[in-house]
Length: 220
Image 1 (tube, rainbow, N blue to C red):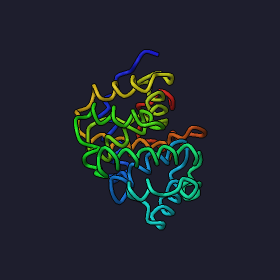
Image 2 (cartoon, rainbow, N blue to C red):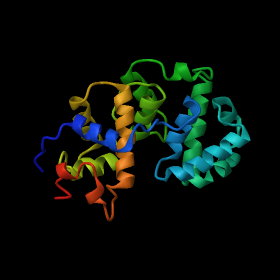
Image 3 (spheres, rainbow, N blue to C red):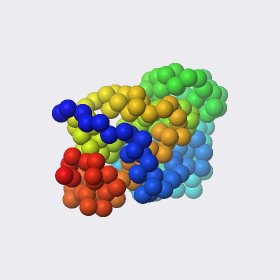
Image 4 (cartoon, one colour):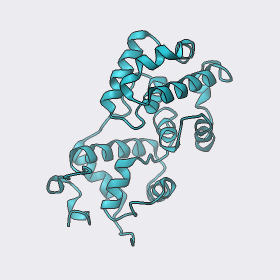
């Protein structure tokens, strides 16, 4: 597919006008955000909210409390998010690292430049590029463009990139065309999610109500 020229800032401005500020990430603090980023892998956010509520009620939404919690209890609390055995191992490891070398300090764990923080996260078992980048963007407040299934769907339908493009290809495409502004990347990611849920659905998309329909090769 030959890429088309649609300014990403135009896409952003139209989505912001349509959906308004999204105020992401929904979390009370940075550690809760990190936990949510792990839990939302391969599941709907409503399931994550149930798990977070259970963790909050149990009083274990801190690195030390989560590290000390027996794993079977953690698995019970996060069961609604699915893949609870794998996710519990990831969360326990993340809490262990924060409580060990970083003495329980989230600010220390997230300190450094973008590449250093991203590499530190990717070194943790169970954390892949999307989860790492969410934490870099929303918890460390560093400017990185998060790519998810919604981003891929929308960009490919707009004709910007092939649907089979790699994560890095999509990310670099966006980051070369937008200023390195963490607030912009934050809002853009959330707005793309809003568009995908409201209009650009995987099945039966509502192209007639999409604010990008006149730019989109899929709807024409």
